[in-house]
Amino acid sequence: MSKIFTKEDVASHNKGESLYIVIDEDVYDVSKFQDEHPGGKKILQRVAGKDASKQFWKYHNEGILKKYKAQLQIGSLDTKKVEEPAPATEPAPAPKAEPSPEPVSGDVKPSAFAEPQDPFGELIPFADPSWYQGYSSPYYNETHAAFREEVRQWVDSELEPYVHEWDEGKEVPAHIYKQMGERGYLAGLLGVKYPEEHTPHRVKSVPPERWDHFHEMILTDELSRAGSGGLVWNLVGGYGIGCPPLVKHGKKELVDRILPGILAGDKRICLAITEPDAGSDVANLGCEAKLSEDGKHYIVNGEKKWITNGIWADYFTTAVRTGKPGMNGLSVLLIERSAGGVSTRRMDCQGVLSSGTTYVTFEDVKVPVENIIGKENQGFKVIMTNFNHERIGIVIQCVRFARVCYEEAMKYAHKRKTFGQCLIEHPVIRMKLAHMARQIEATYNWMENIIFQAQCMEETEAMLKLGGAIAGLKAQSTQTFEFCAREASQIFGGLSYSRGGQGGKVERLYRDVRAYAIPGGSEEIMLDLSMRQSLRVYQMFGMKL
Ligand code: HEM
Image 1 (cartoon, helix red, strand yellow):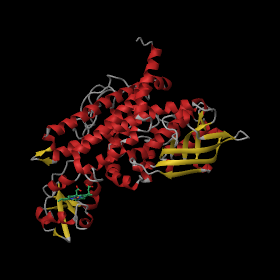
Image 2 (tube, protein in one colour):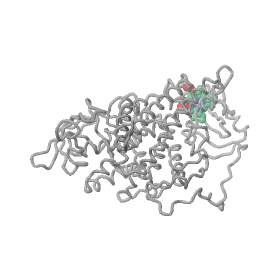
Image 3 (cartoon, protein in one colour):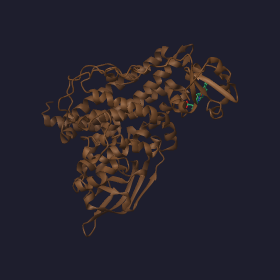
Image 4 (cartoon, helix red, strand yellow):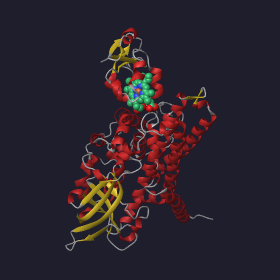
């Protein structure tokens, strides 16, 4: 496959039957591809036998080459410089700082790691967080840097080139979810210490005892770089909100029986709270669970709506009414599909197409009493504690999606010319990018601070003290995302109005915006809660007005 060609060799393949082109000194045989080329056959024939790099980069993103390279590249030009492999004897780069002698999960030492990490990524200003770009940060050590690289490599090679197809097909191949388990990623997404005892799988670049909230953040952040809410919600959506209540509040026998299959990526779990008639207003849920006469089962009847991953789920972490109206009559049950009486149907939605948004009905489902998560009629607290983790997950995704919109627009603004100038030369375009960048950076920095606080606090304390700020941050992040999707769309023009192609990520993300601004607490509820909750807590601190 890796043949060396002269320019003359390539030039001789310039006819319909045998058609070679050169892109960045690599040679591609597009003879068979020309008929299926979405841009047309003729345009390829016009550059047949020639260097088509300039034309190629005008119309495509780097994702196209990643996807088609293996299929179409047949070699390189003899003028191409071969990259020297690093000598085997080269010493490993010195660690930037001494690791903590006895690292524990959640152990972040401000200042100990304040020396900058090596720059990483494409170094486009604000297209990655500043700690990727050679700036100091107190939050990250060498395990975070190594993990960032591990995930990025996977996303760049095996996810990002295919997300458009997956989104249009409304499904992510099952083997990708399985890989989430095998790579040890599912086990790291629970907002608790790495559950070593329930899985043989380990994250390659982070020992379990060093796993912390920032690793979890990096995983979600890097997955989001693929630019598809559907992908991220498919892989971490149902699991990331459905599994933590089981792990934190489930009975040991239940956890031991169910968790290993879930962590391995063999079984899927989702969270079923919202109903056709009750969403953010959790205290009004109606799905009922009645104790059987022998006291061994709950019999569950009711409907759940907009349930992420529901169509694929084996387990449903479900909010049910076991007692009187209001918040003190709610419980949480783990419902197993295998019990019978569970029906799921895919819902047709505006965005996050590959996430499997589902309508669920429970009809006389028999659930063993051992499957209760937390205590009877005390499910409201389980649900509320879970919200912080869910909302932070949403925030991480929104900030990266906003960055993706910004990054795509920034790259496009450097290649698209109007009125004789690249878009980036126009002040009005720079103004748009600047407004995007300032909101992204402000939101990311607030998010880092809150994740650090969560890491330093015990869970109930975090729920109390951070709930208000997290609610405010969620609204901040979804508004930033919406703003950036809109502004990037304006920069792309028609290219982000049609699906796929260069503006494809921005078009898709724009459709995904509402799937973040509404669930997990709508912007309106979040902003109000941020004030109510913070005032209540600060009153306890001794607020003086
Ligand atoms: C390895 C070679 C090539 C591959 C694999 C390829 C692949 C594709 C794909 C997948 C699309 C759909 C849009 C997208 O997803 O971005 C596309 C569109 C297009 N391609 Fe290519 N292409 C190649 C070379 C070229 C070359 C050399 C030219 C120009 C001389 C060209 C011109 C176009 C045009 C004009 C479009 C339509 C863009 C639009 O809709 O805005 N392509 N190509």
